[in-house]
Structures are given as C-alpha cells and as structure tokens.
Length: 286
Ligand code: URA
Image (cartoon, rainbow, N blue to C red):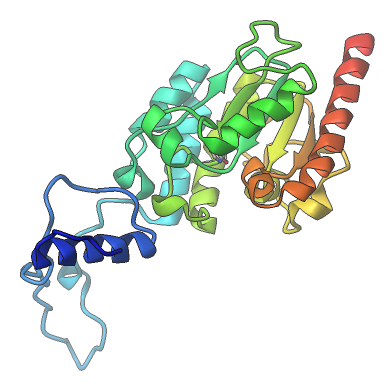
C-alpha cells in the first residue's frame, strides 16, 4: 500500500498494519498497545536442586495458569452441563465457564439463535467475527447463505411454528481468534455443553453443519463427504449426559465451504431435499 502526502512515520504505521493484516490479525485484544520488548518477565525463582534432581520442585513452578488444563476444563464443563436443567441455566453455566482461553479474546459468548422449540436443530462449528460482535450464531456471510439454503425448504429461524422453525448453535461458544479452526482440545472441552444443549432443546432432526460438527457429535474421523447422505442415530458421547432415545442426524457441507466452492451447492441442495422428506415423513407418522 502506498500513501501520498503521508509522513514517513505514517507510511511506516500503514506498512505495519498491512503486515499484521497479512498475518491474520483482525481484532484488537486491548485498547492500548503493549510494548513487549520492554516487558519485565516474572520468572519464578527455581529452588536449588536436591540430590542432583533435574526438574524443579513443585514450589518452584510458576503459579497455575488463569485457564484450566484440558482435562480439568473438561471435568468442569461436564459438571456444569449436567447440572443445567434448562436452556437458560445452560447459557448461564457456559457464561460462567473459565476453562477455555478463547473466551478471553472473544467479545461475546455465542449461545444460540432461532426457535428453541423447533423440530430441527443445526449445529455449526464456532462463531466468526460477525457472530462474536452480535452474540448470535450464523449472522455473517455464511449465515446469510444458510438462511437462503433453509428457506428453499420452507424453514426459517424466525418462524414460531416448530415444524417450520430452526434452532441454531455451535460446537464452540467463543470465536477462535482469526477464525482459525478449533483445536481438538477446544472441541473436546466444549462437547459436554453442546451435547447438553441438544438434549435440552430435544429436536427431532439434527443438522451437523460442516466437518468439525459432524466429527465431534458422531465421534468419527471421516470428513463430511463421507458422513453425509446417510441418517445417523445421534446419542451423546459424554457418558454423564444420558439420552432416552436417539435423534436422527444428517451431516452436510458448511456454508463457508460453499462460499469458496459454489459448485458444491447442488450437493447441499440434495441434503436439503433429504431433510424435507424426513420432515414430511415425521409429520405423517408422529
Ligand atoms: N460458522 C459457524 O460454524 N458458526 C457460526 O456461527 C458462524 C460461522
């Protein structure tokens, strides 16, 4: 980027911004810049080794990190999720959870959107930048495409009628910085929350939107291409979250993939027709 009539200092600042944007930095974490070159690092004083031991003794280790380790975080998530007896309680429990570092960099906890009584629930991956700002899932570009896709089979998140509505949530409740793919640990720690979320919403049909959602909720390693086209019997994988019956689940491509690969829209259209047929079948037989 070149800027005429700018001072050399301003040009240098623009160049630095360009460089940061190129590295994927797209949000500010603090209001003031931090000059890390002059930060004093508080190193713990290591206790003197005893009998030639190589590792520092426990009292010499740094204090526990502000965020929990993955297994501790998962145990806490299970405890909170299992204790929540309504969607409101679950939302409050997730908002109080301090087990994932992505919460620290996010602007909001993104819980759900749409009609919680809807017969269909869709589970995506994680909030993006727009979702993080508005505090609702699927409100950015991919969300707008999703609204068009479901409208094609007469479904809308604004519908108050359970047969025509949809309830939407994500595997993760906070935006991973820079919209990176969630790490396996973040998915693992978040699983009890989304599984309890599904159980409390009790949909008749579950749409697993994208590979992260399909793999996490079906406990499978294959990608969406392999997992779509067949109905799966979804049951919670978290043993503490028990279900009396299975939910019919269908995996499909994520709308953000369709934005990059529009030729695949026809495959999603066939998935939507499959869902429309299932809705019609359920209406006749229930
Ligand atoms: N992608 C997702 O998977 N979820 C959102 O909420 C937004 C984009």
